[in-house]
Length: 237
Image (cartoon, rainbow, N blue to C red; front, side, top):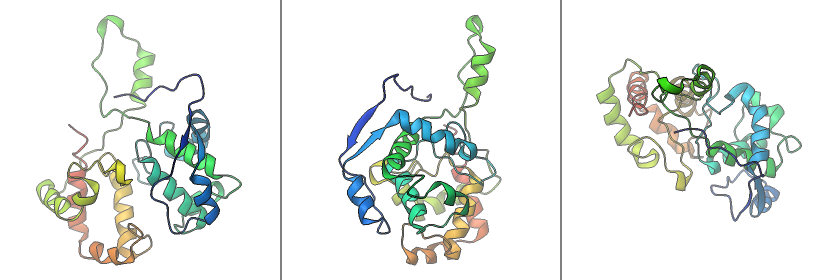
């Protein structure tokens, strides 16, 4: 797989309705999103600001400070951005970038749509010795993301994941785009660990449901590590 190429002409289309509207979204935001212009070329420009933290291709950072955004469902990204704007989800680094002035609805859905269509390979293609281009190879390597394996009990982690998480995030860990549920496979382990702890402490709500906190309280740190170890293997295929 490779990053989908954009045409030279702005890719513009109408979104009939943006899925997964948050109860915290403003009434104006809900109205605007019903028929908003989405421009992928403009989304790419907006992503230049995001790239300082999330990477040029939305690949995120392995240290878990900034998540991978490439390939996440558009509606999911849009919802998180709206929650940052309304402070329903408090994220200090995002405060300067998610005011209405800095991120109006058109900008929000355009960058979300742009990030969704980025595909990142999990490995480099075989070398073509007859037409080897060192610079092109270097550029290709910048887009490769493969989560490093963790040292936990992978089998135990798989059992726990299939029991508690697969009904929403899918048995293969790649989420359910139609329901705007993000993949866990291919996401940085350190970031997932941080979010798990936030869900357990109640600092962040899982699926906007405060009752979900109990689910995370029942999972120990060791069990969470096993699950992350299992998830770290899912992008190896």
